[in-house]
Length: 443
Ligand code: GCO
Image (cartoon, rainbow, N blue to C red; front, side, top):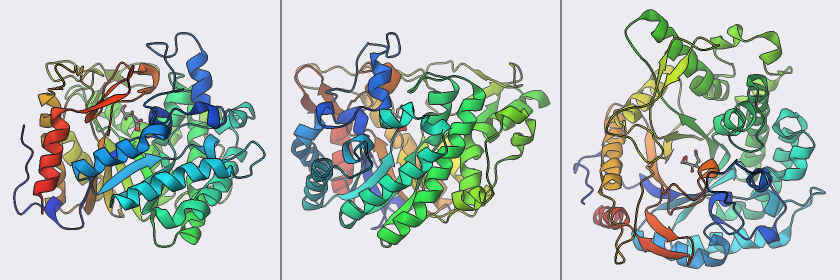
């Protein structure tokens, strides 16, 4: 397995960053030293997590971070994208938990010592349970609570952080968590998903000026997930279906952040499904950002049908990942070029991209050629988009290591590094070795 880019690739510029990504609940463990979050509660409900597991230990990263930082240093990454656990940092009365902040001070110092830049996300879905009990993201006040948390975290840790992202994938938090009920907190109803999304976007917009004040030299922005929506056939009703899905799932987040308005599809929503927009909200949400983080895994095909006039066609064919997702690298180039043509974009970072495979460790080796191929194809797609003029500044692979994959528990392995969840032993997969050779050979 050998990863490479042409010598003249814009991705080989000195300031283009290569990194790996994780999130707090998925790797940290050490649940006893923080407040309960909505994912703890969700995991306690029978049938919600495929293997009945939880995040109480996960990758035991809070005990083992020195080893994990050493692995990243060995791989030669420029940057590490992690998230902070809100319930570890803020007490129930809103005051800072210094012990929780210290954990991150040490980790961030460890990264600095290894020469790795910290890209920190404030919210990767682990809402404190007491805030959910008060209404969670259906309640406007939660946006205010988030801003207070952003203020405390950025004051305490700002001098150690290269880049802050307010939210990771508000679509997932809102739509999967409140709309479909397959993620925490497990509510279902389209209207809930849409209302939650508005309050998440508001939280982002309220936190941006706080980050800009506290950390004027950091790159401050947001991370959104996108899946290009393709029509199932040439008939105009399929094209319409794909457009509606794109508006509701992709542009629903990008457009408010970048232009201060929801897409037109809003007109098709029933009155009680529309978000509760108050005067000034859209201006708040569209506060300028220093970067947009783009997460890409796959495309989605839509056909005319269903209650709303569009429904996804389940992916088929030989190129499915262990998640059942289609490997479709050209979708990443298409997405980046399309965003660039629609919007006045800030610099772009690909903040997640990766593949789940049924990796096994045999005699100390994890042979995962399909991951190597996936990375190569997606690097080529980023290279093509950069050549087409998109202002790309980095690529982060999801994930540093196998971890808790939400409703799939520990059954899906996205890591470059294999984790044995019984012994917590880490093993570089062959893809990680290829990634290391690629990163070390760059300069
Ligand atoms: C995501 C999340 C990750 C997932 C990954 C694979 O952004 O959806 O950031 O937590 O683990 O995407 O599904």
